[in-house]
Image 1 (cartoon, rainbow, N blue to C red):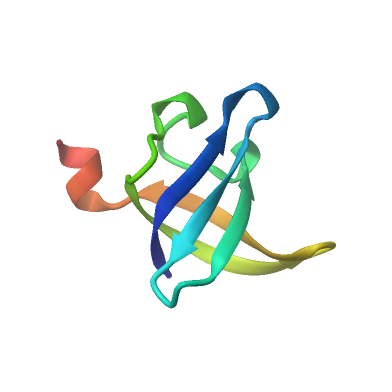
Image 2: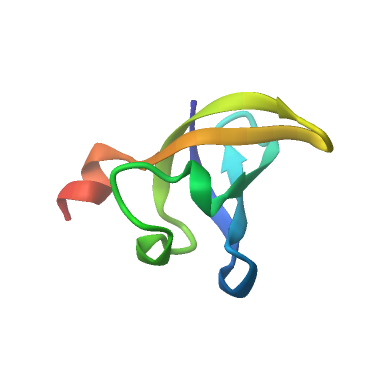
Amino acid sequence: MTGTIKKLVAERRFGFIRAGNGQEVFFHASAVRDTDFESLAIGASVTFDMESGEKGPKAANVRLSREQALS
């Protein structure tokens, strides 16, 4: 799936992605791949896999989109 970073909570190392379908999806820093959590910014385009979590959907394998990673 694709989406954009909507919110980051740096001190607790988690955030939310707004998926392309409008759904808000939780992610933890441990789900970030190919970059570090601190490199993410609100509004950045990302790709991710959707998984079921205890409190609803969550993102796994969060990666900056190719365009974002190259800039």
